[in-house]
Length: 303
Image (tube, rainbow, N blue to C red; front, side, top):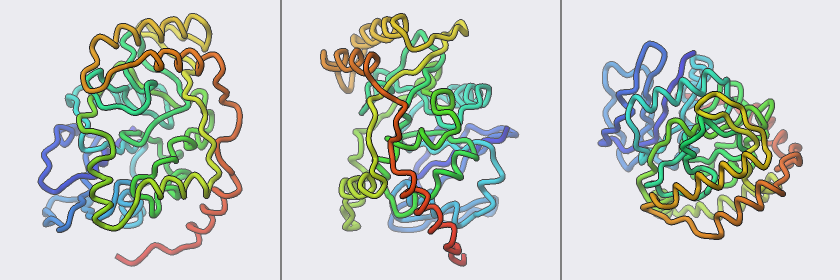
């Protein structure tokens, strides 16, 4: 398996993941900012795009159409994610061993977070879920080919993470949050991107509303559909899993630093696990197919 780590970042950023390399893993910075950096002589791929994360990633694949067939997995990591190189390697290994199509690392207790379900569960290896957020998803090539049209002209792409799990072959098994390799999200959510996009007269929240409207996105309650323990025991969605989730969330609560868990988070865990439905469509497939066909008919620009 070959994996590429793609990070949208400023030219002067020195990130620990640049050291996550091996015969089968490489790191590719995709630069943003007001001025393009100089291309180095040893760069196989070089990319600069002034806009947001996902519009930049779309432009990268337009710039290098062969890139998508040269790797099996693509990990799109924000530049404010912190973890050791070994943790990153372990994460990639778990994803590959379990053949996940869409996954992310869990978040450590000292992270800024948006969704309770993304916080680490220290007793589990991974959880199968119906939510992988935009912060640091890893995607199998087959999934990426289906999802790539969603990135065009979307800087933040908020809203697509409510639907994209259903682009996998088997959402109940192909989507996961990896608890064994938690990572820190070190910066307040959306602040940097929102400010940068405002300077370009772009509104990422209006972009989100337009995306939800275009694809008629209907958000599901975030649910843990199953899990594997550190002892490699599979747990299905049942009362035992709910108990484990609640107990671990309680233990994690005492370690929370950046944001605190509230009683409503425990209430929502109970409601979501007991009543959350995952068998209905989260988006209008006809609208998505139409958008995909339109992009397929568009010739990439000359570079």
